[in-house]
Length: 303
Image (cartoon, rainbow, N blue to C red):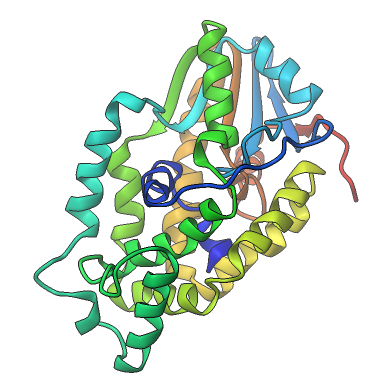
């Protein structure tokens, strides 16, 4: 479940992490070399860069190729607008779509899971009934993200936020694909049986998240999109086809439509979205290629 939900909307992940305190962590040594792709036509250049939403403070956001591409860009795209002043509104949306006090979570789950859920709440520093007001999707995301934050990971150190900070400091025009509400609805809109399946798997894997994220980070840092496709995308498509359709395939198709229109104009764009969107058979690159566009990898592949 941790691998699947690491592809979740970045904005929701930021708010869920707010109930945990991260530990100090050492800065990463040496620059990573994540995968970078480019699409060009006569008057347009479009860079595609996968991100990791949670990193440890001090970790590098990218290598020389990504730095050069971001510096070259006039417009920078992220999944959603990154604006601290709007976090209160985002919290209101999480309450609207993720809290259900009239139907406690304890009445929805398999009774045999109740002790496990209470133990998980205690482990995360919540009261034993701390999940009761949450809908299953929000509880599963909390169970996934909070242990990672407790292990030292921080969405404020994530690649998306680093790109946003650098781009704004450089006077770039900021663009984004989705609103906060759209991001939340991608998760909250899946069926309740699927939400419960996500919750049970998150409970079973509560101790595995930080190690799994570290492995995904390592694949991302060496630019191994094939490993990310196997570990994140294929698992979601196999075990959670409804979630795969909602979180990846439909969003990738919508973004591809936007980027195709963008290529009809002129200029240089840098697109930074979750790495899962740029891996696998339904990636943004694959959809652009299906439209007859040439997508080239800029950084060397490690395979």
